[in-house]
Image 1 (cartoon, rainbow, N blue to C red):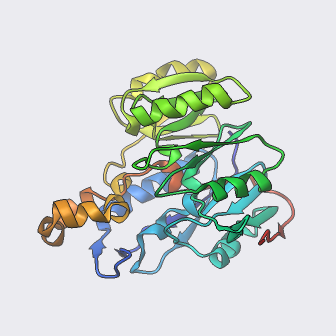
Image 2 (cartoon, one colour):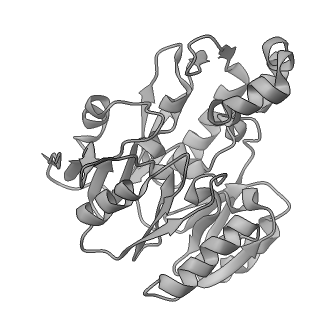
Length: 305
């Protein structure tokens, strides 16, 4: 997939959880975040860094949850855990995006929840994960209404599922990597049954090994035991680039699973800064950046209903 710009929220000195009480030092994470930014620049992208204030909510880092960009249209989402506001997003994106549309609060009389991490674009059609702790069915409807020129297919996921992009990624034109976990195989079954197109599938034993982004004929993925799965893609004229961001990509486990914090970790979390850092940032690379293709003119639309 071809892109011209990337938008990344830079890691501040401290981050705050939803309870406003837990603040942790992010210095071990900042260097790895800078590594992602530098890699995107080397891939030919103009990287726009959005500087967060110290003490910003953890969710503000996930700019890929706050918006999705498909074929020239950038759609401002309504994540279950809001981070960057729509006003901030407009300021960041307006100079580079031709069409900016805002997700409505309500669709068909029901509140919309839409996480960008649940919107998966294969390059030709769109799948939207519908799950208990993320996007709801109204969010999938909102995507279908905005991207009406594309086939939009909802995938109903289990109650414990993570975002859709955790389990599936585009690794080359018409080639998808999908985890072999129960959730990943459920997603594969839906894609095989309901997709209007056919894709070659690369099975990945460890769901975390699916964590990659395809940028300008370069596949950027994590150093892991599953990396060998992608070597054959070099015959597709792709360059394979690896990242070492073990700490950074563990962020938000505590943020998304507060019941685990209180019931399992208890005092360990309160007293162990090292453990806290290691348990953060556990989500797909695609949620830490927004990739777009610049247009010549700027228009902003609001699809509030």
